[in-house]
Image (cartoon, rainbow, N blue to C red):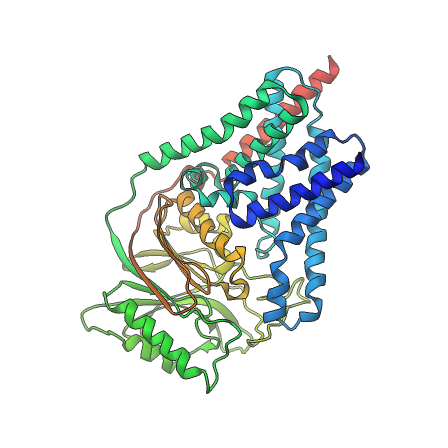
Amino acid sequence: MKQKYFILSILAALISAYAYTTLNIFLVCMSWVPFIYNIVSLKSKKQVCLNGFLFGFIYGLCLFNWTQVALKDYSTLNSYRYLVTILLSVFYGIIYTVFAIVLSKLNNGKHKKNYLIFINNIAVAAVFVLIESVLSHIYQGIPFLNLRIGFVLGKSLYLSQLASIGGVSILTFIIILTNVFIANLIKSKQKINVIGAIFVPIFSIAVGFIMFSTYETQRANGVKVSVVSGNIDPKVSWTESTGNTLASNYFSVCKEATKNNPDFVVWPESVFPWVYNENDDLIKELLKINNKPNFNTIHAFGLNSKISNSKDDIANSVLLINNKNQKIGTYYKNILLECFEKPLFNTFQIPFAYSEKYTYAQVGKPKPLDTDLGKVGMLICNESIEENFVNKQVKNGANFFFVVANDGWFKDTYISLHHFYIARILAAETRKDFAISSNCGLSGFINSSGEILAMEKSDSPLSISQKIYKNKEETIYTKMPFLFSSLLILIIATSLILTFKLKKS
């Protein structure tokens, strides 16, 4: 009998990981059922813990498998790559052990009245969402751990709309609540679970459809933007033998991008692997391409730059430079990558094999860059999955967003796919247009309704142009980011009170 539960936990982990990595919405709304069914069925605390850990560990192995290739190809930690994957999976095993314990306590299956069953199921999903939300705050700067279930719904235009009410949390809630109803239906055969399992996804899609249909995107204050990427593998170094070819690629995409007189040309993160200085010959030459005297194009370069005369004060940044080689503004990255851009616990930093090791200064602030064309919200790489950080920039007046990223470290993995679709969630969540330039990843444009205007991935130099629109709109989420979480806490409290009264009676 115990073996059956272990098999179900492993099966649930494998299917859930597949659904997550492929953004399979239909599958993810059922894949957690075996795990939830297991936990609410087990009586032994030991078995609850073992199944929780087993699920989390296998789930982690699937989600963190990409780290082996990344560490092998781009780091000097090749010998430890399997150990890193296992340790990350063990950590996920511990996290899901905790959730399994909480789930088994909350979902006791003793409720008989429909309204109590309904509230209890919502409370179970609410606990999961709140745990995930708290962990998301803890994971800031560690994006490879911050794998929120709700990100999967970024594949759906209609379901993404709900993020404007409750952020990513409401998307996770929809997925887990649907799984909870199905799991309890299998366990108890109660009709209310049938109703819930059907009602939750259909109602969510219907609300999202209405929100999308009634929302009017901006059609004034347009800004012409070109996103470009050389799509250069991080393993390719700028040397005497490669430099001319790489520079030629940049000249080619720059010429293509500027031929229609864009207001902005957005380059990816780490567009050049050296520290910027004002006399950089390559940048000067790029700025001369289609340099028309009566037109001012602003280039957004993702570069390492000095913030003082000190050798160690290097910042991951985006520099806005016009075609007259005048600096318009500089954005310094605010949320640094733990272990990579800054040492973990100030002691350990993973060394890269193909680039110089820097310890970056954390001097950035969540403020958009002010230009004559509007306030540009800047997001460098992992900052583009931090919804609280994005919300701060909206509060500070961001009219639209540029995402600059280097997905070369994990190209051809699900991480790159998620990177783009998370931007769709954030576009709908904030009602802001997004322009995305990613080296070796997905580049393109997403408007404030969540519609993907352009999306392209290429192994060769790429240029895409699109008009985006600035606005000052705020959503329920950007105005009240803790509203949905507060509602979930209220539901949990209500469920606990009703359960306590039931035990007393």
